[in-house]
Amino acid sequence: MQISNQYLADLYEDVCRKNPNEPEFLQAVGEVFESLVPVADRRPDLIDAGVFDRIVEPERTIIFRVSWVDDSGKVRVNRGFRVQFNSAIGPYKGGLRLHPSVNLSVIKFLGFEQIFKNSLTSLPMGGGKGGSDFDPKGKSDGEIMRFCQSFMTELAKHIGADTDVPAGDIGVGAREIGFMFGQYKRLRNEFTGVLTGKGLSYGGSLIRPEATGYGLCYFTKEMLEHNNSSFKDKIVVISGSGNVAIYAAQKAAQLGAKVVAMSDSNGFVYDKDGIDLAVVKQIKEVERGRIYEYAKRVPSAVYTEGRGIWNIKCDIALPCATQNELHLEDAQALVANGVIAVAEGANMPSTPDAVAYLQSHGVLFGPAKAANAGGVATSGLEMSQNSIRLSWTSEEVDERLHGIMVNIYRNAAKAAEEYGMKGNLVAGANIAGFLKVAEAMKAQGIAY
Ligand code: NDP
Image (tube, rainbow, N blue to C red):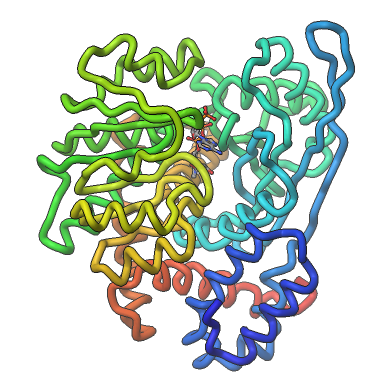
């Protein structure tokens, strides 16, 4: 890490010493601290108020047992997490991830990033994240339901519409949110907006399923337009084929691009004629199947097992699967193939050396906490609709989402320029997101 402010460098060392087994969390803190060097240089008052020291320590970390019974009658035990990282500007807000790779480091990195992302949306939401090492793949609906109910039985003690409002993430979509919402209601005997990403018939918002992918494209469109380019006639590669990837693909195509490749954790499909999204949706959203099925159904497509999606020639790359999926050699391949923009739909999908390589080779780079903030922003809009007990139309929600993404781009670009790093949206997003939270933490006194 290149942290050229002594205070932040010493603090980072301290964070490393205290959290030695948390590589993802340390990676996220290091990246944010690098960006905050000019802020620490100019704002000794924030150092005096202990803001940097406090912001890297979660307000509360909850780790719990989730026991459930599988279809054969066997008792299974998973580990559940909720990290309530920072409530300076609003109730904790952030998704729940169900994936075998989930551990404290992953949840802390996601919760830490969420603080700045939520701040960037300009909505009153603090940062949190949760999940479990439960693997939903291959489980029956009954097993998923029993797991979600057991998970919520403990989580319900710690969340609430004005305290902490979880949402979906990897492995958690409308089905899982529905089971968890039902259990929360049963336990508390109250119908409140305690989760977002709910079904439309019980308080969900239109456009929430589409929001992260659409928002990613709105952000990328703004970034391209500020550099005299657009999506029109561009070739786009998108990793993943889950919620974020599918709706990024849909919006990119609507904006005039051709999406030629998508993937899952087994491999990727390349379709020179452009991905037929109806087929992907059928496989992923209806059948919950694997992406290789696509090549069996669409003759123009080729399936390749394993990594390698970033070797496909494209103008715009949108990593939308998971953390650390785009490595230095992938960045080198993208640059060699003439990529003009990379924008992150997933959280921290690019490794630090990949980001540095892309930026130093003139590639427009949209960092996750700015580019994928559309999901949580629309969750914030769902909370507003729940509070006033009204539902807005798709057009209304989409228009607000679009406005929020344009503002995020502009605020990140402005902050980068003000702090001497013009064009560096990684730094700009970190600085803009941090400053609002920092001012609130300072104003609220040091017991927070
Ligand atoms: P989904 O579970 O819907 O989809 C995840 C996709 O990524 C699947 O195609 C999955 O493949 C693939 N994937 C997951 N883990 C890995 C891995 N280790 N290696 C390769 N591929 C993998 O999740 P989402 O689309 O909701 O989330 C994707 C990313 O976007 C995550 O980083 C999430 O944190 C981020 N995000 C999501 C938001 C949302 O609103 N949903 C909001 C903001 C960010 P497979 O099926 O094989 O596992």
